Length: 64
Ligand SMILES: [Zn+2]
Image (cartoon, rainbow, N blue to C red; front, side, top):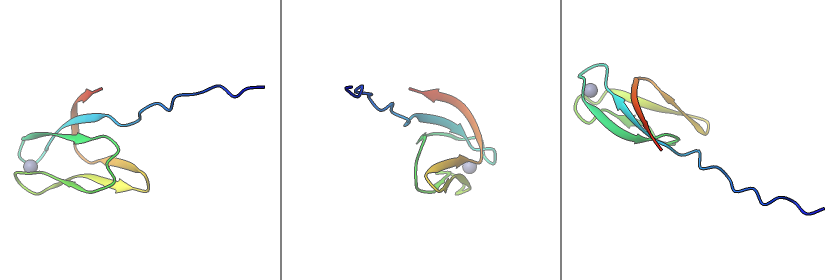
């Protein structure tokens, strides 16, 4: 039996997040493996947690 050629779904999405500290928004990669800080106030907005990223702030939009 042939295996189905499953196209891996791109998990990666771009998220628009809003810093709860200063209110500035920025676009980040949804499964970023690096820490993302607010460009304005340097608050940590996204933390890498073993493959997935943990969003520590408000997501205002998901861009697919
Ligand atoms: Zn900020």
